[in-house]
Length: 514
Image (cartoon, rainbow, N blue to C red; front, side, top):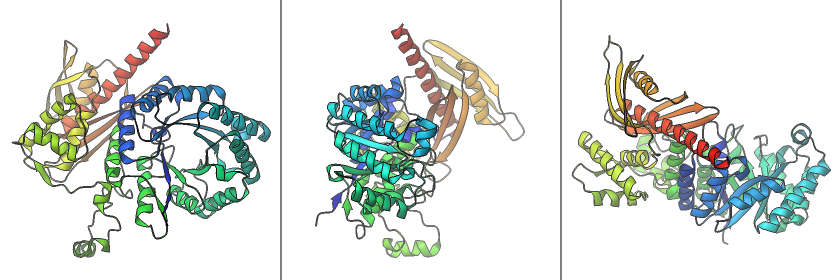
């Protein structure tokens, strides 16, 4: 008997981006969407078009550029939201309008200030309007897990009659327990008239660490779509982690008679890309994609894995695209060999990105004799995610000693203008950032600074991620280098350039309206 298909609905670009500090610019969203298509997700929820001009444009661009998955746009249950979502989705190969309204009494009373009958009418009207525009309509009763079951079923019946093709049951605040949530899905299947006309979906949050468990319980009781995010990012404690739900299905096919269309070999790359563009570091003990997920330190574990991998590894690291850190290229390697190997790793760079990455590779290869795949990925990711440079880091000297005061001297270019300054700090990075702040006349606040090594050893490439805050917006910069101070400077300047670019585009949009 053929295993039943579970539809993977990825909301990394919508709910995932709502993680504190996880904002992505349009180009980064497009990069992630393309990787999600390579990963093989069935639906990409690209954003909430009416929420901002930037969100509308990113949904429009993803719909226009990305082929394979259906592209969904989120809307509240009103005509204006739905029309805006449909406008953004016009270029999609396959489009889905996803509309929602809360159904729990606590939301009706305190947020919506509406009666049950009013909300039921709004939901049905919204779905009917969406269906008049698009054949694929998803409806979500927000906070379904805390809604009265009788009223919830009444609303679901009304939206099915209005034309909903997918009914998504959200555990919006991560309140449900697995047995309880599974029973909710079973009850909906039993009681809702016309339920066979729609796919039951679930959207679970991880406030109590149960998002994946609740999603699995829902699948066992009839849900056939799971809404999830790469690395489990999302509001508050996050969402169901795509990599965990997919690998659970793959690993435990004896108890989970399901299949997905996911190419699991793309999981690790998707995880790394999302971490890079959002600046949210994957915790080492994160299931499937954490750095410790396939690491064995205890002697008895190491011995067992050497003898037979399955003694302590229930998943093959190669299955998620995790390769060993083998030596691949050296300083004498040419451009063609470099480009060929990047393609084998899954990277498709344009000519400009390739030239920048190759130049950085040569620079690293001259200093670091052993270049691993992980090093190469760090270099490529650093160069491929550059933004238009308003400020260019041209020259930097940093001096420190055990008893002295750290001092940085930096020269930067802003167009044809040369900017130079020197400043001291409590440490090397602090001195560098103080100097850059003196040169860059852009208000901002350093919200976060994170550093990690790509591989082991004192010659490891260091990756630095910084987040700058400005008027409620977060701008993430990332730098990679053999020198951690240089990586810190690169990350800081990249974040500043993103901030400046944001100001420039916002100013241009304002002038266009005038």
